[in-house]
Length: 84
Image 1 (cartoon, helix red, strand yellow):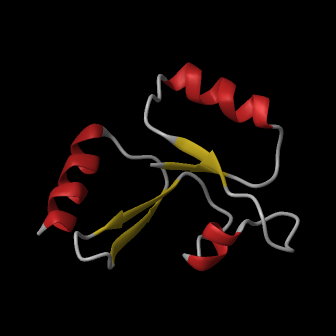
Image 2 (image 1 turned 180 degrees about the horizontal axis):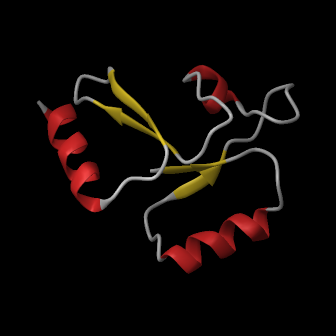
């Protein structure tokens, strides 16, 4: 599941997803009173550094918040670790 930032043109986000070949479900982090940060970003304490990836364990607890890009090997290892 991907969450797009609250601010910025929607067309730019869609273009980036297409250019990167991302096919998983994504949506905009809209809502709330803060003009720059949506409620999902605020709830998980994501800083103003992107990309940010949350790995959530099967029990719903956050395992890791990873800031910055990852290669496929790191992504797979972090998913494996979160799965237990």
